[in-house]
Image 1 (tube, rainbow, N blue to C red):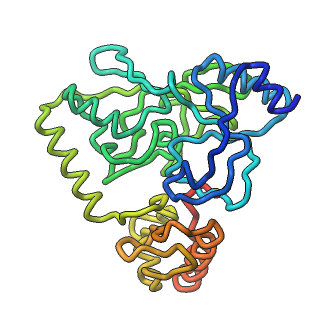
Image 2 (cartoon, rainbow, N blue to C red; image 1 turned 45 degrees about the vertical axis):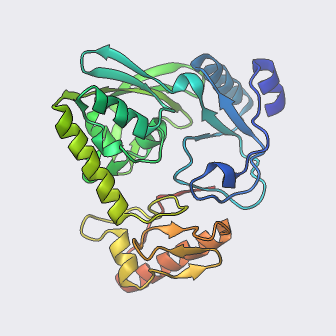
Image 3 (cartoon, helix red, strand yellow; image 1 turned 135 degrees about the vertical axis):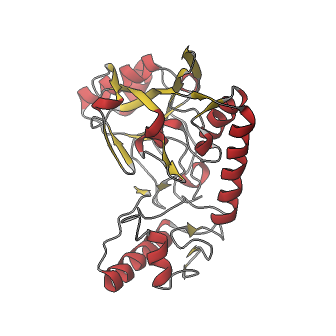
Length: 297
């Protein structure tokens, strides 16, 4: 059965007319021919089950802040969770269940008002919860896994499962979940704290981000840090890549591990050429193989 027939059978519309340039923070990418918005768990479960039966591959997309799409038409099936997946529900006094498509700044702001500590690091992360969990995102020494209790996932066969933190494989830059499963929500345990103290930490985090991170269209850090002693930005800076340009894209002059689409005319090819240059120079100078953090389609 084709994707079109499955969607018609389940009454799930394709989202027409969007491009990678429209929906990513990089502002790069061609037409998305199979972009699907799913608004509740029941539909997601049935959709994944159908795709599993028909052996149709798919990718889950969050806020598209860590994605580089190709310039040509993109025929991959891309699923985006919306509506009922954006929520914050109280389980008990300091424990909450949060939907996968809830934006991180909204989560941080909500718990600031409630004088609950744990999400101060997320105040200006341009991401949704699901992607933040999958990447085990961190900021100034805190990982989202630090406050995690459990993750709810939809398995490829459509079954919903809850996996407690102690059963998850958690590594830097990734929380591993079963292949082709989808994070639908997660539970967190927060700490009651003085609201003024939480607000102060949030202001400090926002000021640090504004001071140290480049402005403009980008996907944040391009490469994973090989180690704490040899962060990618330092290595790229030492080989002289700040300000290096390819077409409409360039290595930031503020932070060498960021590639900026400062012209808003950069192509995926421009970015990939800069990535290759960075890998080659760092390997030659330091014998270190840089691994990309950005998801490249």
